[in-house]
Image 1 (tube, rainbow, N blue to C red):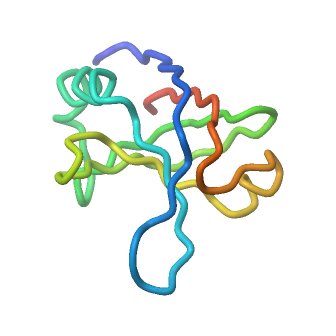
Image 2 (cartoon, rainbow, N blue to C red):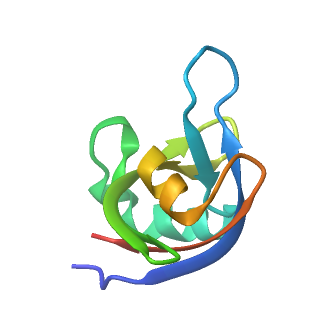
Length: 101
């Protein structure tokens, strides 16, 4: 079993392009994504997802990160209630900590 590592990074929140959906995401930095894939990729679930615990500010929740073939990184969906609680919108920078579950 691989030990759980906490990853922290600062990234911009972005809105999924196209369509009418207002899905907001944060991209895990490339080097961090590569390390996560190497260490945990064999444990991926459907669509290549990996379960994580996420903390932004005072908000912590369980979700999954998903591989994005276009960018070569993992992407993290940001729930509307989390964005509201932390005052985040597309273009804002978020301080994010994730731990693989």
